[in-house]
Image (cartoon, rainbow, N blue to C red):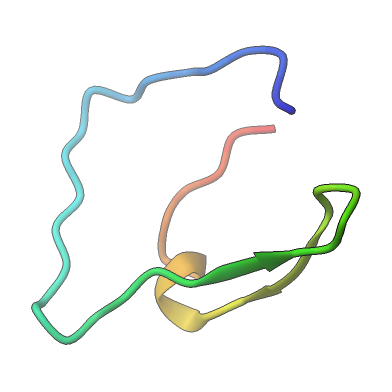
Length: 44
């Protein structure tokens, strides 16, 4: 689980046919993300 959350203040919009998909294993590690997910900025 993330320790901190950083808000950008920027709203992201997607078309009606775009769905954000991610899958994790039993330990919470991401094992799959789709192209739409990759369009989202991630701050680590």
